[in-house]
Amino acid sequence: MSVARAGHSATLLADGRVLMAGGSTDTAVLASAELYDPATGKFSPTGSMGTPRYGHTATLLPDGRVLIAGGKSKDGIPPTSLASAELYDPATGRFSPTGPMELPRYGHTATLLNDGRVLIAGSLLFIGNLKGYSAELYNPATGKFSPTGSMSVDRENHTATLLSDGRVLITGGENLRTGVLASAELYDPATGKFSATGSMAVVRTTQSAALLTDGRVLIAGGQNGKPLDFASAELWDPGTGKFSATGSMAVARDS
Image 1 (cartoon, rainbow, N blue to C red):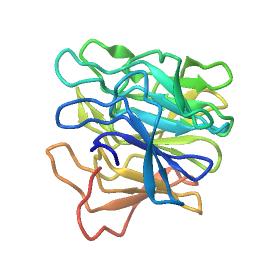
Image 2 (tube, helix red, strand yellow):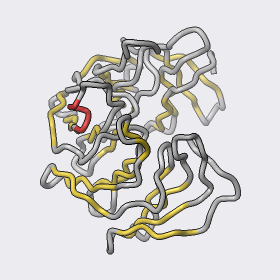
Image 3 (cartoon, rainbow, N blue to C red):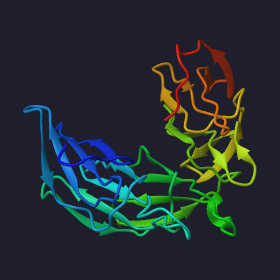
């Protein structure tokens, strides 16, 4: 790449290229972006974001644009989580503002739903910000965010997995008041509500989640916040709503 990046996003575009956006270096937070072309094996510059950010989400929309949402503009106190969002258009190579979100968010998830909307869930909960339980939906047709149902508990660094039936499975994460979580819940876009499902065997944050071809979800690794990384993994079954143990990885891993 043209510059070292950490905490950036990498999004596969409809034409096969990959958009790298934002991130941070040892000395600065970046607004720049670049494209990787697998046909040439090279990176090339593209338009820059309107706001430098890292730890944001990047979601490919059905029309080929990319939604960049939230993140941080810098570290320190007071916190600098962002409510702003922008759209990258690969046809022009430019970013343009959209939104903003209802709340500043960092450590959140963004999940493309089957109807083309994007579910934004969770965030780092700062003391006094009880709205952290909330979730919101981005509508690309209007360019606006709107509130949807609230999660049962505030979460950051959780996972959000689109299921075969269109619901979204939220697992684990961390709550600043109660610590790392084992609980899980389901978001139903038909009702706009969250509901509880089975809990994991252990508390996990910064774990990974992958939808399997049979509809189950593999949860692997993560840590318990002490920090202690896990090699263990478990499976969530949509038929029972329960988690069960599966084989462990060769080494402990977290993201």
